[in-house]
Image (cartoon, rainbow, N blue to C red; front, side, top):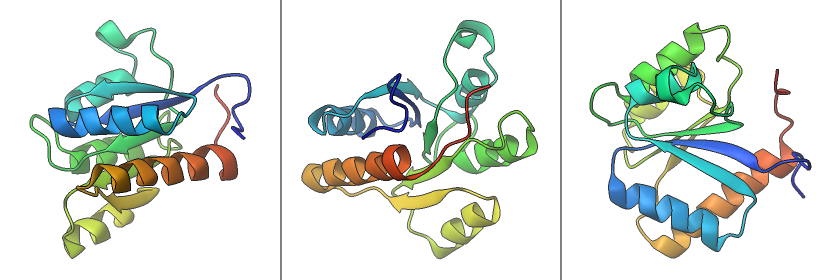
Length: 148
């Protein structure tokens, strides 16, 4: 059951690795979830998307952000810092989805108030299971802030 019964969930994937983008898209497709997956490849584009600037003026506000940490231009740490500082964005749930398993990264991201920190599995079947669990949790269990 999707608590967003009148529309698909809007998910923003912030990821610079084409293979990870592909596997994430496939994970959502294989899990047969009612999700519109949007993608930007760096933090700077993420902030433009979230602030609806330039070519992103008509994009929907994401219900969930899947944020990689290590990206060019503006990394995930900088993005999360900006989101937390912006009163219009600070309620958006941000899940760190990364290959970085450093204890300091985990600590720092929770200190910045990420909603969850998840290590990306390398195996596609495990990744698909992760995507299913992630979306089941965020879109059937959690109550998200209403769209303004």
